[in-house]
Length: 569
Image 1 (cartoon, one colour):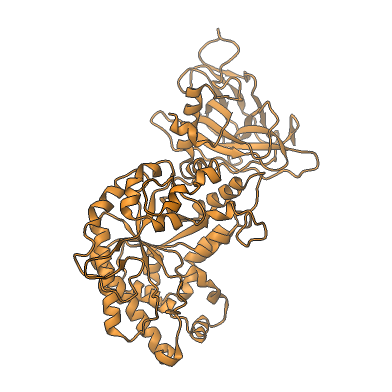
Image 2 (cartoon, one colour):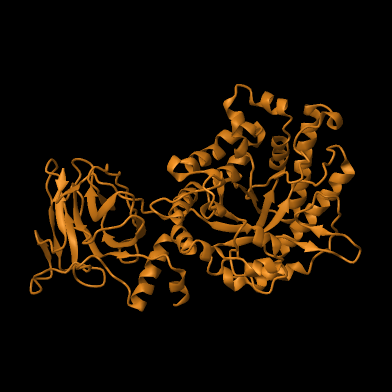
């Protein structure tokens, strides 16, 4: 079935908002690792433009007794004492009070430079106290939790059996479980319901799920990490949020392959293979699927690099956008970004001069923070950007008659069946019972005029965008609707010989106080598209008729990703 040359089954690009699911984006990278919390605080205003919710913070202190303290080196045998670094508490409080830094987390590494013997009670007592001290500092400073990194940077192999010193696997695994309980009991005593964002918890180990005897494979590898995690779960109270940050899939995953959806499922299901039966209920309660995305992948120039991610729809930013969207939608509320070669903000007045001179991410990948904003807060972003464009005189609504006014201005203020004002058209399925399209001159959002469908079982209003679209362009789409069973789609007219894409529904917001719901979304022109149509439809079950549906304030406009517009407000 065709309508004015457009296939009714033509494709729609995903109009997507993960605002309801993405609680926080945490910035982590070489620049945040190198700066002190005091330097983060001094540059806090710059983070207001990043769309992040927090950064990772590291405590470093060198007291007069010669100790070298770091929250990233709690396993290295240097004892912390209660009272150490308490001057950091007001700094933390000030940081979390800043916009876009309220979800900042304390950076904690749980790997040693030199391997600890699992049966060395004295050594583990030192680590236990260290955990207790930094947890107290974080809690008193208002930090909501911890970023926990277990990557073995020093090749100490702490979480693998060393048969020459550890004894049997069973005995050592029992000790590893004991130590996990010991350390996290100390942490929970000081910070009872934290967020624990692990860069890798158990999802990186789901390969165990696919063998006949997972426990035997864990034993044969001498892998102690699952036992340590189970020790943590043994003592984890209700209310703790344990985020599997899934660095592996986050760094290498591709939305085009559905990697983030698959991994989120595995975090909730396949990872249970490594959780002891008595801990599975608590794991299910506390686990949150998360992802870390490696930003350098989208600026690395070496196409042969394993980390390189090339253009999608003509842009590497679009590639990042697709992956971030799916990661956000699949997650349970937490994402983290990792950066090595660029700075999140222009650092001023910091000791490490390299970062004062570093190129920022907004310079390296223009529009990146607008893109993140549009993914996190889609409706708010589109409405705000539309307002900014209006203020600057650059707003161009490609839909004529956005307010859905009728051509007969002297007509009565009532529903006018059959009157479909230009440039809109209408269609309904001839095989279903027929309803009526028209204009209602008695109902509108902000005025008294709207498109109206009544008793439509399956049909839609449509409007063609009067311009040729170009791959990679972004458009804002705004629609107001009143009534039930209404949906919106963007359909693309493809180049000759290019297969149509599948339609994707746009979800409206909840009703406002006046009964209107709203779409405010971003669409990006896909490869092969040359034209664009907005379809506003109703479909009910066979034999069930819809009530009236009103549509008003319809806009499709070029939407730039340009952070300078926000700054100029």
